[in-house]
Image 1 (tube, rainbow, N blue to C red):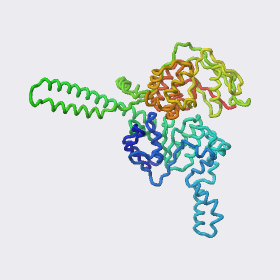
Image 2: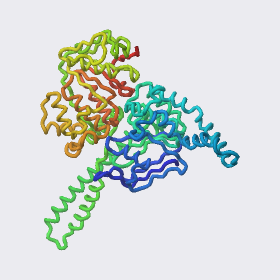
Image 3: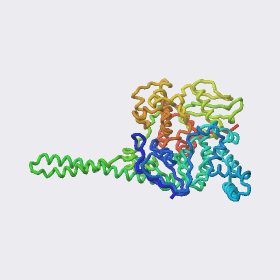
Image 4: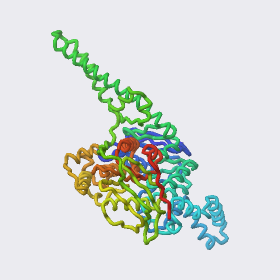
Length: 550
């Protein structure tokens, strides 16, 4: 066994994250960790890498195993070149390189040093380090990081590009176990294909935090962190859905039996108490019986904690009406997106003619022509850097009557009744130092929409926030999933008749992704979206619009 995890207890503040959480990872096994936002997935990774030692229990790693994980912060290495950052983190590279660089001038006739130098030469060659820089540059190029960027300081890269650097560092690390957190966020379709290809072919163990269903299709085991425990499912995403549906249906059945048993015990207790009150016998024969029934009721009540239930919609439909009705009654609460008004007729909201955008009169993409009518869906496809974000910004500017902030050729026509709302991956910087409550309030005020304390509290509840505890958190303290839900609040605030979505499933857990897909499926307006989640694309549908580099 490569890794054994047996966590008796882990808490943060007053919140208990894990309670008897257990799982194992075998050599060369591909494992995915999933779970609702806030269950402690990233905290678990910090525990596995010894960054967080504050827990009760054991984490046992094979003695000779080398673990590598994706870094979240790069402040300390911001001035280091990308290439040097990756190379310097290779196993034994620094030691071997030092021997090869210094020993020829100092070893003389020293046989021990000569042997050390000879061994270093052999190891350096066996590890492929003579050609490692070229190999790394090729890997970076697959993620659209050029050699010029690779030789420049790491601090110049965007957050998404740094994520790609971490993946290349993992790829070349020759580790026994790689821990990767949300690898496909910010990836275009080509980079994502490259990552999945690597995941399928890599010859060592990988544990990945991901709700990307395309990635989950290529793992050997899925660990669902739920109710503080690790629920282990052998197989890929398809196998997980089947097992999860069966297990959840059984748990719902057991939970219902427990509820009925409690109800029967309560009726028996009330009946015995009535008989106890009406008898004059001494000693009263109903007192011991009442005690036994009351004790049984208390013990069952203490053990009866409602589990978190989630079954994917397709499985619910396959399991019949009775199970479906029970699931609707007991299922885990998901985000609740209020439907936009749908009384508008199908008409053209946006038309683009011979459009090119760029800088210094240099276009990013070839001339573009398309229109979008009320009720239509269009998927925007293109490599990172081809101008997808620039196009979205230009459409947004045109919808508000602003002059385009880039060089523009061609035309963007917006219907006068267009109410456009854009889902951004990044939260507005002006909200970061506000509390969540203040951020929701500020969002509505910026759109000149009526907002009261009661509306803010209701909105937070609809989007799975605790209106009291979470409402006091600063936005920069929120998890990625919580920030994503804040973005959806902003998205739907002005009852838009057209949405532009930029990778909306990033950071959302599986139930929330499904709820978003369900809400968008009943949305009456037009949608222009960027997504490299094949499941999301299939469920949302529509036509494809490809941006081709000029």
